[in-house]
Image (cartoon, rainbow, N blue to C red; front, side, top):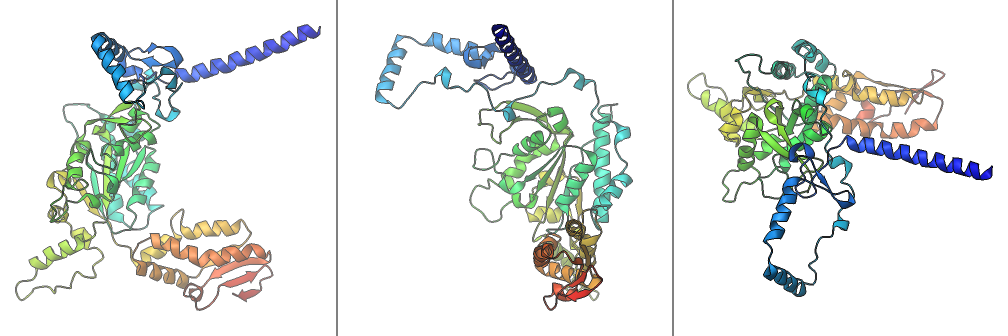
Length: 478
């Protein structure tokens, strides 16, 4: 009887092991086999030939290997033997050294057959421009013109994607260039937009881009980021949005005798990418030399939004405006535009060209618009009105401790004034609030009697303390 039980237990263990193995095999079936020599997936290279140690090789590479072996004669073998004596550190590659499997992030998923029939976008499901703007209004204060331009541009773009080639009229792609001072909400606008439309978004930084062959990121690396954001799904990535920040950093360098590998040459390399071309990008790596499979992505339906602060562009605009209105009895004063926060709205293509962007690059960004500089009133609104406003975040944190947090209107104005002095836009608000709330967040958990904290202007300016209300309606001045 004991022997039968032992056999039964052993049988259960074997069956469980078989089930786990079958599950692993099913998971492996979801991924394509990849050639260990050329790193092409099975969908491109054809059916793979399996060798020992889980190695798969495509027929082309195997044929090339046989051809090269057949060309070796006796003299060549002698030369190889002599080379190995002269260079003792030189070793041949052993098949056993090749890993059993490549990392999961570098594997290509098999494309589903039904994906061709199903439409990714439907014209009826795309929100209308006014609805897109309403959703942006919940998170972004001001910038009415920018929100309107983005809403219409994105709506038209995805209508173009959804319609495809319905008739002989082909709708051209409308890439965008947004210009605005630092901290005015350029990146936040695009992030909110991508979340609303539920499309893959890649945010790249133009400062790291260099011409092919030099140290830095290749121009195609921006498409690699989008493919990673789409979970290596090429079809999904081809309908995404790429936001290239700090685009002003690839402006053409002035008065330089050296090769401009991160300026004009990068702009020239991006021309085909912006217009629409097929790009081979590595899966799960940032470089094509990383011995990983390559996927072909068509950028024809990818919306490119470029943004930059363009420091110094205001001076170019002022110089042009002063030249236009500096002659005659009705001439304007030269300092008329010095305090104009909306000077960037007067920008023209000629101003951007003078800044250092080549005409071919500007021509591929037909929609150009500027964002306003943030005023004091706008900064106060940013503090309290958006859905995820900074004040609401701290109020929620203190509510978890059972404490009510309030800010006086004068305190908010003082915070906005401090932020304006820093000249970093809305980013300064977070730093100031963190500094103000540090002591309060540290001290409040100590005392369970505190019921309410009111931040005053004096506390923000370090001339007084906050108003602390105890649970028995007793007011204490901090």
